[in-house]
Length: 287
Image 1 (cartoon, helix red, strand yellow):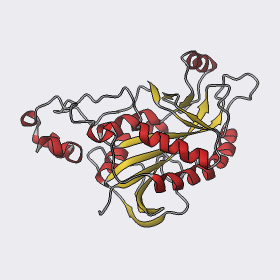
Image 2 (tube, rainbow, N blue to C red):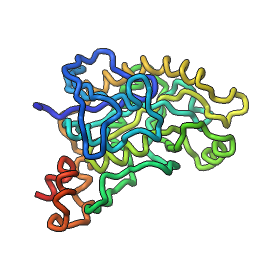
Image 3 (cartoon, helix red, strand yellow):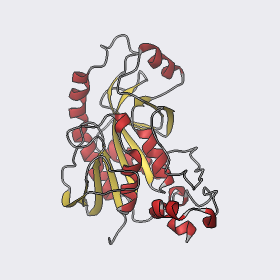
Image 4 (cartoon, helix red, strand yellow):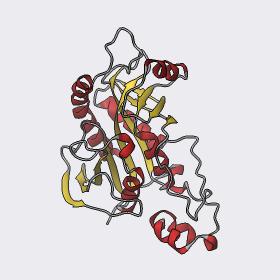
């Protein structure tokens, strides 16, 4: 592996990237199980990229079934330093329209069934997560989306719900009272695990609907989502191609050293099995 790679996690409707020269399909077995799908390793815009279909090709996995730890661990093992996450979301604000692009900079977690840390079982770490996305990568994605003609919203809060059902009207009204910008089912765990893995992570949230709070709109349906997903997919691919070509080769953001002050367990107290399990994450801090 000659260079640091850029990871792309494709959400609903985005199961591959047009223009990627696929060099190999990589199936990994991680300490946290199998990832959602084989990783596609290739080249795009002159850079090495690693693509993963979040829900598996053919959209086989529910949000709560996603192997978040295996997916992010696999990205780390394959040498990824940046992850561009593409997700379908619902809008919780009047001025955030279907087919807009939102670059959220905050998350609220409303899930309850998911493992969202690599640590435990002999190793304790407490990462800083006040700013849960990489500001530099998010700003670059926003710039590229604007250059591609998208209506872009910089910043905002993504509330992550368990799913697979959409919100009740009462839940939707509650989230709006919190000032939430968009609603989705997947990105909180990815962002948290990427921070633990010292990978820069940013979400490009593509709006498909107004959830169920907007009385002048029909209630969200699968048919409505699919129609807007198709509109969003070509834009997302264009933005990704532009962003991959614009990402530098060095990182100056705090993401690269997120574990430096986070590991509470002294190296000599970490069990050998835990060191082996977390090797690609903590090696530089425990050797």
